[in-house]
Amino acid sequence: MSETKGFARIYQQAKSAMQSGRSGKAGWVLSFVPNEAQRADQLVGWYGSADTAKQVTLHFETREQAIAYAEAQGLRYEAEAPAKAAGAIKPKVYADNFKFGRHENWSH
Image (cartoon, rainbow, N blue to C red; front, top):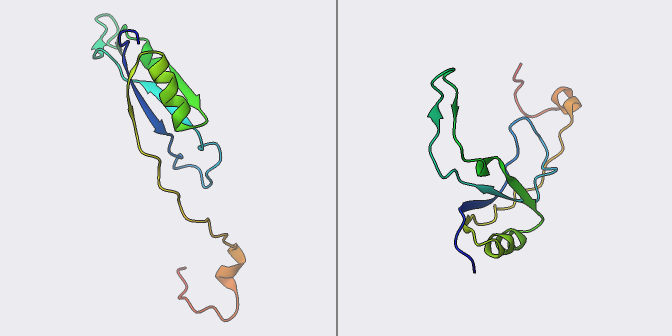
């Protein structure tokens, strides 16, 4: 194994708060942890660093593929445990808010 090149984080990407479904979030992500802190540019005041590895994000089908890649490249890594599967999505019908014989109180 070659010398270690950096530190990577392996995780499942969480769904956005703007999404209601779970589409497109089944894979695993390998992202690099920055090696140096960001510093302010003297001229314009923007923050940045010379470390470009944090811009790289790799996507894998399974956790094992991501770990195998990290080990093959000589990366130190931290792999998160798989996320607990969420329950089934219960379909909702807007018309049920106004149906006759409704037992719940009206909220509006």
